[in-house]
Image (tube, rainbow, N blue to C red):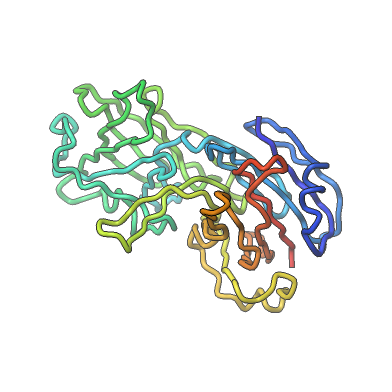
Length: 338
């Protein structure tokens, strides 16, 4: 069960956060959560908490306008195919340990091992020019990719490595051919481009299939999730799992202000920020790990300005990373429609 705490109440401080959260707890279903809905003025601030779990295995989609949520499992998908009619980009699930390597072969049966693999990762901001798959359509043919699912259960070692090629893509669908790395018999699957979705998601689980992960793109603004960040200061670059917040790729923009106090930001200031659609604008560094206390501490002075797809502006900052019982994985935040 997924625990979600929501409080719709006009507030100016968060000194009573713990007391309020203890009083208003809600347990909802994993698939479609029904949050507490108490009427409050549209101009009032809101306080909310979502629970991604102490093991960070859940991802929670959140709509700032309706406060609706929907949850799914981080490991529920491996690949995300762009749904725009002209889109051809493919992303991998960094939070599930997926990485990919393009080979020099064009036939699945020519690929049997990982010798010579040059593993690639997506940018954490989901930029289209920084994907592990890169340009998969070539004049000489579409190359075979090897996909490693590095977090797959040790009980299923045969499901760790897969090979795949994209046979074609058009305005309505992708067609892929794939198999386990050592298999000689492949499968062909057509993945439709769903008009009201950002991505069509695919999982290699149970032999491979399309899976339902996200809500309709018009019904959420931010998602709380585990994902992979790349530290390029290291050589080679260091991939690292983080827990943070990503933007909806559809007409949702944000900026961060670590100088102006939360209470001092109003609509007149918000419209002058330079907003970006980069998915990890909010990201994960609104919190920091204290090695002395062995706990995360949030930075409430990091204020995020968000413009949703309806054109409304919000300000948001984080208050805690723990539920009322002191268990991590439960981000609490205050937000206010300007």
